[in-house]
Image (tube, rainbow, N blue to C red; front, side, top):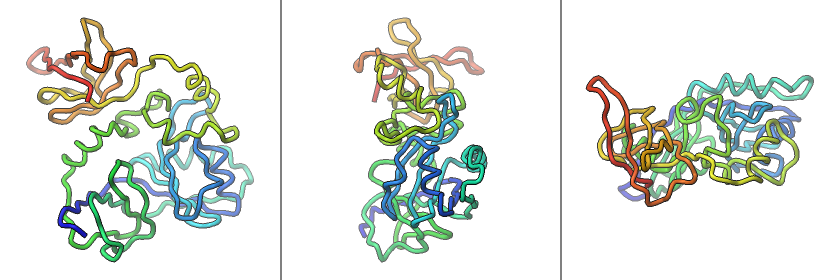
Length: 272
């Protein structure tokens, strides 16, 4: 392990789905292929409302032949479980909340430096691994503060449910369709909308990372040539995540505009 290994404890809700029909049932409900996952493999997926709007963004890990670990954003585990259970009827599947921690690891790390791990999977952010278990740790690592992780998350334009994704969001605007949606599997809840928008293409708005001068407010408008082209969902000093129209030129000079106690403020911005 190098001296540059950093860890950050993610706040995630973790749920175990188990039962002889667990894999087939979860496969039928989510946007990702599940039935062909190898034990130990994980995949990102959406759980959608029948109309195609986002209920949850979750990671699915195959723990065994009849067990799946589902982890999602903090505070949304119960809603995810309720949504998943809505159509199970007599299906042989049970859901159990796990008191697990998710530790995100950046940098090289030897396997023998990982402690307390039940599963180790590719991280939500590129270049990281996530360790899930009751008390995971990496010996010799240093802790990352929340501000540093938020910089990485926004730079990667990786959304949070309840922050960047809400009950009106659709997968096609998330920037995660390639990672979280299968276009070769059979039917699943909300599939029709996702497939229709994907096949049409076009210049839909999309979650993007922008470089900004200073600290912009969440909810701020993004303007290009006097036209409003987007809005900010997450913000940190020097960078924001925002929905931006797909027809905005990548090299366009943008302005972020918001109101605060001092009146209207603005800052120059550009797509990262």
